[in-house]
Image (tube, rainbow, N blue to C red; front, side, top):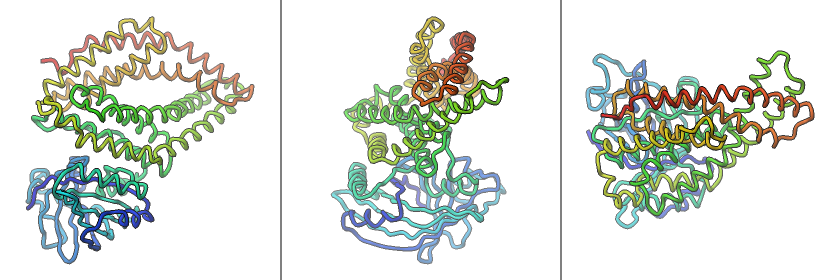
Length: 490
């Protein structure tokens, strides 16, 4: 059995662009073959829940069992030759992952034609693979068109330089979704659904750098998969989850700025800010459309013009979603995802910051305490603050929550859960207040008929009438949070 850390950068692209990618690549040793892979799991998906994939792949008459886990460019990989079509559950790490007596069953299969080139650049050896085919599960199937760069030897910087060169030849979108994830989504019946962030489990003894990278990979994965959903079929939840991923990454950079600060950080932050700002209107309009629809169902009598208002808001929301689709299809977005990934995985900060190799535990306590202090300080004048001031409180609450969730695995889960529940309650109140603050501006920017404008005024008035109670509830939630014992306290 071989146990290695696979170093691989993956992209999705249109099938018709694969030829241009290969033509633009440096010369090397070429090969072409058919790969047939069967992925296995238990009936209750033990491996999927553990973030593990298991496949048996056949190529040129040989079969190899492969176990992978992890997210991002670096992933754990275990390969074992097998004689038959079924995997061997007695080899590690499968033996430790599977309950005794558990049986493995085929879940889905992948069949691709792979064009492959081994490229040598300086001290680096990089395997370029272009895969075209499909994943099939039951009666469902989904196409695959991917470009993979696997670093066999040498420098990560060379691999990223090659990625930049290939990206100039065709539109390549960084992807953290392996074939296993695509198959799992397919058999679940949700291949093109918005995805939330996954729980982050930091290994025991994780360094500051490892903790930052684990959280950053998760955020980048959330951004890229929801962007892929948006390119295929724009939907409100995908925009929401895309923005959550962007906020998580921006917040993470701020939390770890004393360690990850280098010449590239400012550029990544600036482009993430662009992506966030460019999707704000779409998300705000989606929230407003939902509020108008709720009002139409609940208010009796229904204000005159509410139907016209609902139609105007829904139309504006659709246009805004189309704009976001164009954004995540753009060269600027593709460049941002590639450069952010390169910075996270191989940025100058890794060598420049002595604290990067320190254990994360002490850093986490300081960072969480700092976030909590800043939130509670801003919250002291919450009830007298302006809408902008309350928005700053909301931002700090989100930063604390993202930091808490990203570092939660370092602490007892019951203590974390109690604290995060209080944060969630605060965020709910602050979110409603923010929706009220943004609604007026959105209404003003819409081409409304007189009847629709009248309905907008009535709805805005009802929202403003509810504002004092929301402010009071949020202030109480802030006080409860202030009294809660921090889960990171010794």
